[in-house]
Image (cartoon, rainbow, N blue to C red):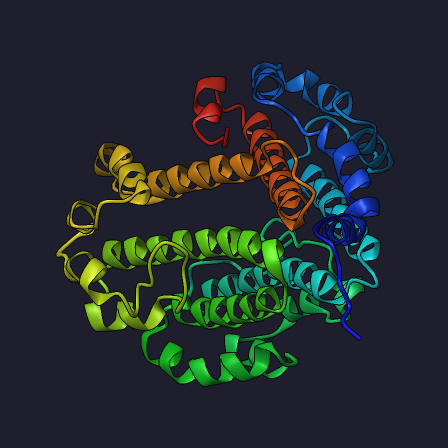
Length: 374
């Protein structure tokens, strides 16, 4: 007996996977702030910022009200907004129960934030141990994404460890194994980048594996989004290494193995000149022609004026934002809309936290706008 499924039936099945979560995403998408609203918040007087932010959405108002804030308390605002971001992830994960491969992708996307928490612990501990910090006071304790209840790993407790090595010994897998392997090299150079890179490789590999389990259009669109993010991560690894004078051979060890537009490790002909360049400016100028090179070239003058790679990071982040928005155009009923929403929500919260810090420190609006991703 041959089972015949018509194209319309296949499309109906594809849509049915997303019907529930898609409806919930569309409702929340309408609450995301546009450029005009963000500019209004930047221009708002510090004493009016909190009330203006609370007027943005009901979700923010409820959470900020419960936080019992007094004025612009940037730290409390950041903690509260991060809770809202995690709520969105958990909504998506719960809404995709029964769609195994799809749900698994979003669990790994959420785990990205746990990795960020762990990186923050390692950076803080390294700074403390090597004399560039003063300990783990309240002001210096990292502000974690609240994912511990989901993953059941108490990363926040590791701030009490007395060394980076102690942090690693108290971890569980998947993190302990990859960090133990990288620890001897870290101990030689004291470069936190070595440990961060080990974590990046682990989570990027896990995400790639879950994406490859998807089928059809879902796999294609997820590959594009994830691959673009890996491309941008590799570009920043390259530029940071160049800015720190790290040798070419060592740079190659840090690059993530896969990207979307090109593979830094395999496509030697395309990136070899850039990786071998003497400095940051030359690395940008020697890159093969691409949208990435165009973006980085546009930020080159700012880098040369500031001698900081932050203008490059901001430029690439804005490029990624444009990429996500283009994928969302028309709100297609596929995994791209859900991934896109979560990224946009993450960017919005990063923007709001930036504005809050600027308000608390009385930084002028024109300077604040340079740090906001539009």
